[in-house]
Length: 66
Image (cartoon, rainbow, N blue to C red; front, side, top):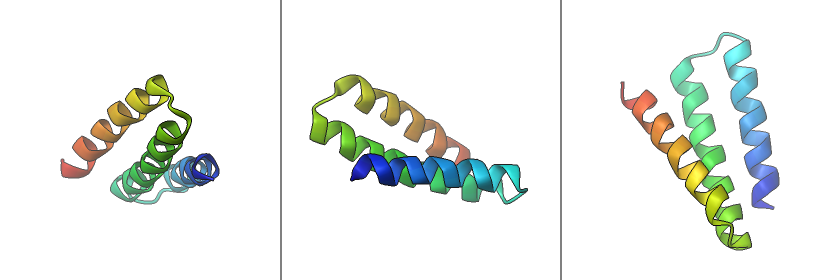
């Protein structure tokens, strides 16, 4: 379930970026997708997927803050 939500979030993020919406809005959408993917990683006990999404979330938070 979390994987589907994460995938939809990433697709929405790319759609927002490609149609000229605010980059910060797209980053928030991506951050929500990261949270879903982190839930998916914890559920599957997949540390590499979890670490990847923690790093991506960090970049998203940095981008939103700046």
